[in-house]
Amino acid sequence: MRPGLGFGGGCLPKDLAGFITRADELEAREAVGMLREAAGVNARRRQRVIDLAREELGSDLRGKRITV
Figure 1: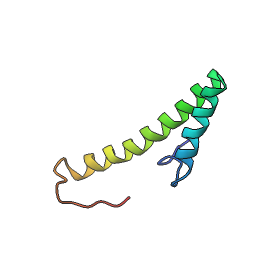
Figure 2: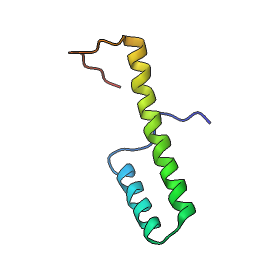
Figure 3: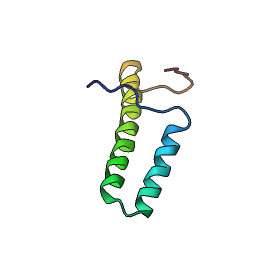
Figure 4: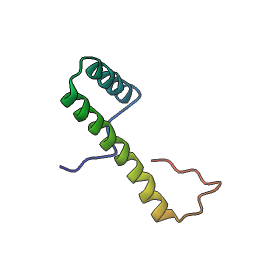
């Protein structure tokens, strides 16, 4: 697999957080762990794109706007 920037839009990360909360309320520990890991992977993928942009553009990004 070759994951992209992460999944998302405005709703999916919020919905995932809701699933985590509900699974925790139901004491579904395995589901909580899997959902948290999915959220973590998603966050790391987005951060990786930022890190790559910084590597390519240099460390001084003050005053610059970047669109991805």
